[in-house]
Length: 391
Image (tube, rainbow, N blue to C red; front, side, top):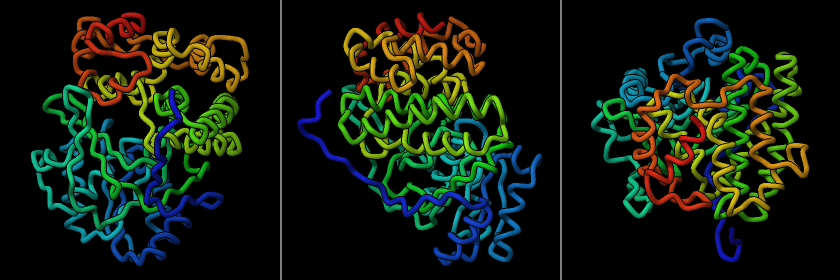
């Protein structure tokens, strides 16, 4: 870790709204932005099994222009393009996304497609971020989307705070990054009540994803006092909120803690802090093996902590303290915390065959955050050491 030289770059997010129902907040933002044709992208279960999406559509009244509720896990390109084509046909001038991380990231990519008239999967290729063999990222330069996005998150992965969309190319089983300052949403609405309908496994596992954000931020090669404070307080809130929301799913105070903890967990990421192997391997497990975002962190994070302990074990003690277990190892504390939430702890629990570990290791070397892991990962065999432990 070094804080001798660096910079903290802030996003173009306008505002975060909390303390009022999602429908009311979305309408207020649509009015503020002068939108006349508001298109909604939502999770299918939330739209078809609850009335939460209908509440938002009804509040928008004649501003409501249409709805798409098909965005599979890991935001595949074909689903992104299909939604964008629907939104274009509706004359959309504002996109509202209601759902989890795949819906949020899919929505960011939809705004990209709308701006650049992308009508098929191949049309997205020139806009993705490419990582070279030295781990350097290359960002395409293009005009930012005109259609802005309002996000109502129903999970805790918190990607809505980041100007990055993770989109999977289903033809290659690779999750790829689309990074541009203009992809950041205009506004985010934090409404604990709308999250009650989120399945428990999804709520809790994405909560661990937020824990992973905070952990890898605190241990980052780019760590600094600003991001340290946010990361440690995020861990405190999530340590309190996740078990409480499991005990009582209707505890809106606990859910509010989780939402704010998830927001704080993203502070380092959105200001330029590089993460490590838990996220890098997680991206590959999602894109290549369809392991849910949250479950990748539930499984990988403690094993990555153990792998990195030889180089940052002293600093890891602060993580254990923030989680209420001073003097213990961070990987042991988090292993128990995740298990107590009844979340998976082994790769084999996902149905992934051990015959695919070599493929996962090779593909991990294509992820930019592999190259910023605190303990260097230079070869596929280095990654395999972690995967074998986690299997």
